[in-house]
Image (cartoon, rainbow, N blue to C red):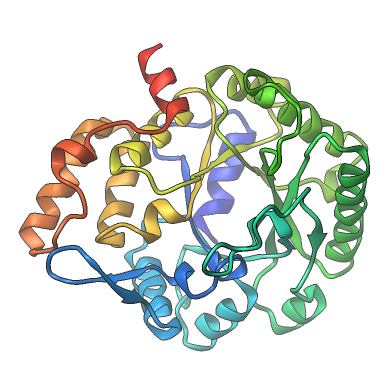
Length: 334
């Protein structure tokens, strides 16, 4: 039994309590920008030296799985295959999960990606039948982006429909990631939360229980939008995505605020992958999510841990204690 299953059952039954918040490490960066997505190797001064190799990256992933603090480890299908063959998940309560589709709005190639990509276009590299037959996982992440363009959004909805059919045929469940528009959509900034909420709710309105997502991965567009979506349908377990790296105060503040306003899952990628010590940032994330530390206390405790271990910090404690993401600043001052 994975912890995820137990926690989801409690949340859906209305029995959520501190300690039931679900934390996922989104280690699927190779589906967007594969070599930099492994994360940095730094020198004794905290300066970048090189990117991790794939083997080094998988070793870090294995360490985090065996730490046994997370509830979900999200990776690409190819990395899940290697981790499974190596026994990384053997006896673990951490749920192995794979990214089930690509999308063109998260397509990075050095030096500058593809410039202006235009509206997100859906496509899928993973073969669900192969993943199911290999017994790697029965849970995948499907991503969709609405951009306020009828042709682009219809194309995305049709691809999502095809995915649901394929997933159901192969015994695969999924959780749904919805991004903010990746282009200038014409939607005013103050209305992005409402725009995403409406499109998200609409795309699931015709979907019966057996093909609905297990939970959501969703951008934090402020307390008002999050509370609206949470209140709209209690059966939709809402999770937030981490976005950019920011400071470690941003990491802990996002956890704290989203739990406060009704989210029950956090799925962080860069916020973990770029940390000086990934197992230690995860440890302190758990403490914040469970209400055992405030965000500011967690920053100080994390820096103290780095000092004790002789690991150079990228930012000073003072700098790392600042909130830099606008939506978090606004919510924190409310």
